[in-house]
Image (tube, rainbow, N blue to C red; front, side, top):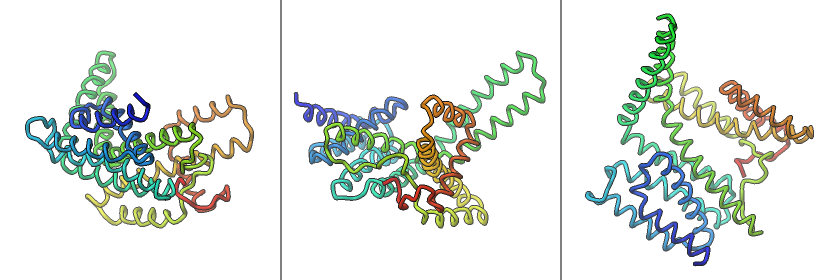
Length: 311
C-alpha cells in the first residue's frame, strides 16, 4: 500500500471510531493529535473528500442511541473540536493565510467548542475534581498522621489542597482550551516538519527566536484586567481564564526573546540547559517572569521584529 493511501486509511479508521476512543483519557488525546495531523495533511494534499465522509460517519455513530458511548450533547462538541479546527487550519493555509493568523482564528474556534463541552459537563467536571481532591487529601493526611506531624500541619496541608482544588475548578475552562490548542499546535508542527523534510514549501510559524505577540493585544489585555477588577461571579471567572491563557502565550514569546539573547551571547549548550532547567525549577515565578518579558517585548520590540502573531 502506498504511503498516501495508508495515511488516508488510518484517517478514515480514526474518524469512524472517534466516538469510542475520544473518551479514553491518554490514548484519546494522542489519537486526536494523529487525526488532526491527517486532516491538515489531507487539506493540503487535496484528500479531504474521503476523510470528511469518514468524519460524518463517525458523527452518525456517535449520535445513534445504541452504539453511542457518550450523550450526544457531550459528544457533539468533542467531535467538533477534534474535526473542524484541523480542517479549517489546513484550508486556510492552502488559501494563502499566514500560519499565525490562521492559528489564532482556529484557536478561537477551539475555545468555543471547548466552552460548549464545559457548559454541558461542568457538574461532572466539578465532581471529578472533588473526588480527586478528597482522594489526595485522604492519602496525604493519612501519611502525615502516621509520621507524627502535628494537627496544625495537617489542617494547613488540607487547606492548601482545598485551595488548589478550588483554583483548578476556576481555571479548568482555560486548561481545557490550552489542551485543545496544544494538540492542534503539535499536529501543525508535525505537518510542517513532514513537508519540510520533503523539501516542499509550507507556511509555518517561522524561527522560534522571532515569535512575538502583537502590540495591539495589549489593549485587549487591559480590557480584560478592567473587567476582572470591576466585576464578580461569572465575568470575573471568565477574565481569570482569559488572563491565564494570555499569560501562557506571553510566556512562550518571552522564552523566544530569551532564546534570541542566548544565541546572541553564543553560550555553550550546557549553559543553556542549566539556564532553562533553573527556569523550570522556578515553576510559577519562572512562568510569570517569562510572561512579563513577553509582555514588555510586545510593546518595545527589543528584537526589532515586525509585530505579528506567531507568523
